[in-house]
Image (cartoon, rainbow, N blue to C red):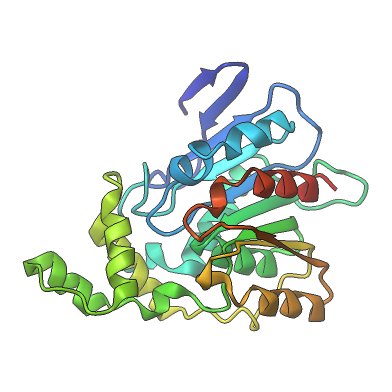
Length: 275
């Protein structure tokens, strides 16, 4: 285990988790006595890019919350496993569960506000968080999903076109695939071939949010100009039909790219998870 101090807040990596996954736990200077918060970033991003550089981790620490941040396989400071199984959503969810317990989270217990786990996911992280909440009802207290979608945008990613482009520069006809690949290549810490393995693994486990619906309260947040999140009301309706209290927040003028930087998003999430 390694550790470092940042100001008055203490952060450290977690002993006992998969050594290829980079995990950092941040402890607040003044603990509010509430359950920890797990942060799940989006495709081609990292915990640093989505949560640290945008001010989320400082804001959550200021609110007295313990924060667990993880880099997904092939992203940020995590390793790039060679086996395809490491990239499947079900394996990632299992790893996240182990990380949560290794970081001190414990099952929900009536009357104990420090028990359980809150989860915040963005984009791909929202898909993983939705499924994580649906399968871990005894652990997850509340969910915040940013840039959510009824369909996984990676499902339509043209793997063959991406591989050809990387091999010899053949142009990619599909604009969505070209945009996602360009975004993935823009971050030097990304392992581009590992990210393509992730896309392939995700295609092998299609996302159907109606198959397993979280029963805990959910806050869904999207930018007003985020076309990917146009189906957010449908997700909210699924949650409500399952008996969950589902709230929605639209961020004026924001897109899928910059919604995560919104102060209103942070404030709403902190208030929602403070209940």
